[in-house]
Length: 177
Image: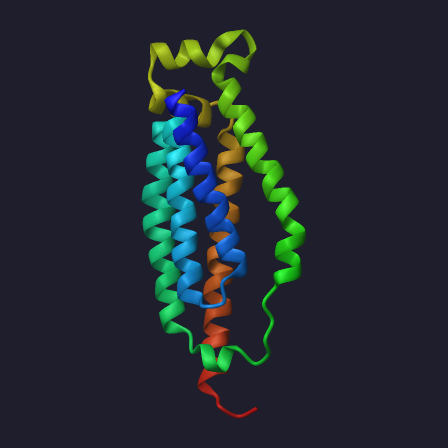
């Protein structure tokens, strides 16, 4: 019962933080709300028994990505970037049912847990090996091709972000309309 209450608190914090990400106007506040949401998701992973994924969530997203976003927010000249007032409130409100559905899905997965796995294979693997070993074994055997494809997609996205950033920095350096 205690795990369910903690899960509910982390879920509520994640939902409220996500609403803050959508509705806040100040970019610094948006990054703080994003950081709060990422920490809440890590807490959800910890309460669900996925300690490795929770630790990776904290290390990769809550530390590295949030620091990167803070760096970008502080580096971009927002006065020049905001030519028009275009805060996507309508899109945020329309996406709210989708987000709520995903949280209900997470709640169902949390309540069912590894009991829902076919023939209890995951529970047996976790008891024999441990959480980190099971993730590594499944990731690098059954899902190895998907893992490599995702790494290529992330690499392409990173190269694209660098190219777009270089192009935008050249645009902001030129003050002519």
